[in-house]
Image 1 (cartoon, helix red, strand yellow):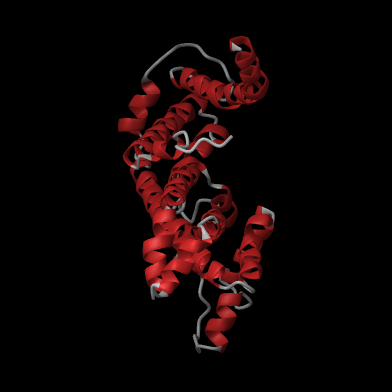
Image 2: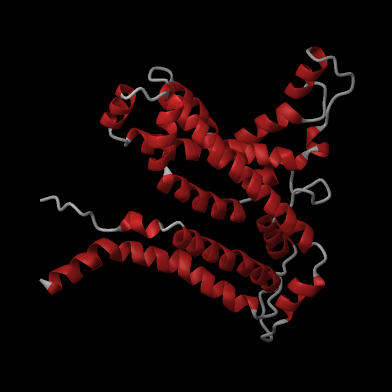
Length: 299
């Protein structure tokens, strides 16, 4: 029996374990090793040093601005869109039996579209020319005389909005599935007792969404910390590095400037906080309770 269990573990978990080892654990170990070297564009290592970490803490004047921008970007994108707006979309679309599915499919279109196509639409909508969608509305409907250049004047707001709409669709799908999983008899009993829509949401729906909301918060926080795809396509990190978040800064230091060792050291500050955030959120939200063995044995 024992040998059979071990064989089952190897057969079913072995491929996943190899993938995790090769594509998750090994890159972290390689990054740690490179961070303590002087590797540059020539990929040569001549010595092991702590100079990269000293430079990160004392010699890089751009880092404080990049870190503060990253905090603003992650906090507002997560709080306003990924969690709150995703929850609103899930509640409203599940409350509309007939049109809810169509509305959800519309919100999924940005996520299903190629990133370049999605950002091209954003640039067409907000560029500084008179032909942009925003300027046509502002000038023809509201009587604004001069065209608005949102890409130059409000780039941080644009990266939050563009990433937020993508993140809201993810939260909408997860939370919609959780709401659909609530037993129908709870809603029938609440309505029979005279509960209104807000009372049902507060006392039945929201308690059932505790674990999905925790999962979305952890996942999206880690995702926003390391992603810059839509930012580099929309603003290129500008103007004047005003939208250069930490992950994009690490990428440019590493691959554009050829400072591989320094980039690896900066990347460690993404890996370690990411692990700490995940563990802390897991611990303080008591999420391990979600993975407990069921109290009712099903034969």
